[in-house]
Length: 174
Image (tube, rainbow, N blue to C red):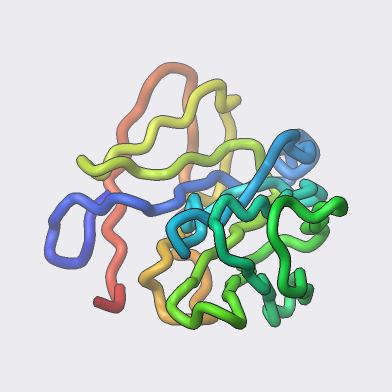
């Protein structure tokens, strides 16, 4: 993973889509998007469609978490602790999160229809294990893409054994 200037890009979500991948996807267990230090932790949460996400507040102040995104509109009004009912993300796409009390708080829930995904670390590397051979669409998303921008897509054939692919993600905002 690299940005438009060729520098390693951390925090990019890479995923492989295909009809077979969609059939293999299952909701994840134990997903959570916490609030700590007046920030969402993690700032980007990647889940599969149908996953229930808990929103524990680990701060000493109350938060009012919301999303007005088309894939999932919800509000968790001013609260401390962990709300009893998790939020079920039942449509794929990107949900942008905010807090009505702390305007600087921004988070993202990326909901996918595939079990084959990963997030790049500081050196810009993502490793996807146990991917069956086949034809896929390799998609790449980053929080610095313009709001509403689609994940970048490239067709790819996966063969048995390890293979390397370099993806350059351009158009990122500062």
